[in-house]
Length: 129
Image (cartoon, rainbow, N blue to C red):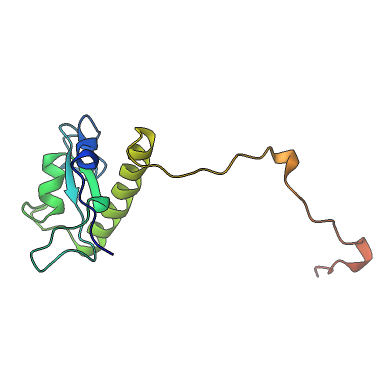
């Protein structure tokens, strides 16, 4: 698979809230597309645009380890993964809502129309002791 590159998809960051929301860093305005590392990253190749997270410039700098957290440390790998996953989920949902990402949805079934398994006879049920 090749990396996806789309200026139209990247433009979806305009007017978006920050999806990274790093405490003590986030200014939650002027979102820019932040590329998370993916399997396409490296060898002078930019990550796929599907790996983009909407982030404010301050969070983007911390996320890319160009700036430090308020405690003076670079973001840890564990925290980076947390913010990357949460931000990517929020960004993908927003892209779907604004029509830049199309995912066919299943029709919602009313709860009463869902099939239910018949219950076992009382004598056949395991007794809890």
